[in-house]
Length: 114
Length: 137
Image (tube, rainbow over all chains, first blue to last red; front, side):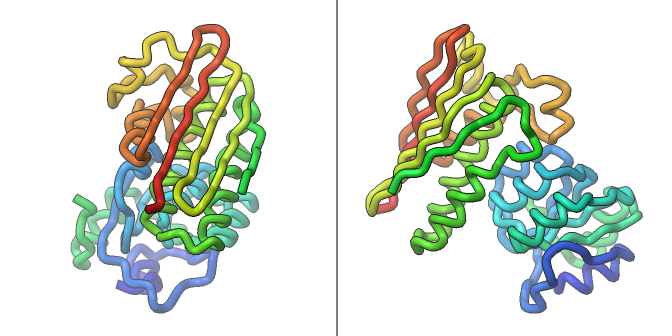
């Protein structure tokens, strides 16, 4: 699924790095624990999280994530947005809860990471 | 090639800069993506550990055609029980570290998983030196 389709589904606003129109998301992983994000392969995966700080971006960068959904109406600050652009990570801001976002994506055919 | 970075105690604003810098360098050098991933995940875990637990330290990275050697040396409390620290889920992280999304006790096990060689020298009240090697060939 394209990043813009995902943003539409979760009524999200796209910020951070420009959308890679060719990137296909197949799986999702929901976690506020960055320690766990670092444990798994994140190929073709979107991270759904309510953790909104610089370390969210650093972790996403190390995990090779290309797109992160920030749920619960979390607002990234300028530092975070700069890190996202530098690491080529698109952020989707959504007012929905993590549970709701996860349910929407699952219903739309996005697979769990495991 | 040799690179050195400084680690500042508790500075979660800049934590990860060294790992990010190394990742860019490895990309420029054309290192295979799978090797870049395991190198930077291991280095990032060690960098976060040092920021979270130590009083300061240094990161030294040496890259040649065959391997990447990363040494994260800190002045700090040391690790009283290394066997426990290597167990998944064991953590002494502070509430502040947990607020940052870390402190699940997965750091050292994840470093071991992502490196070919791992050596940890630690002395309580003095500090810890973590030496990680990733072979490229």
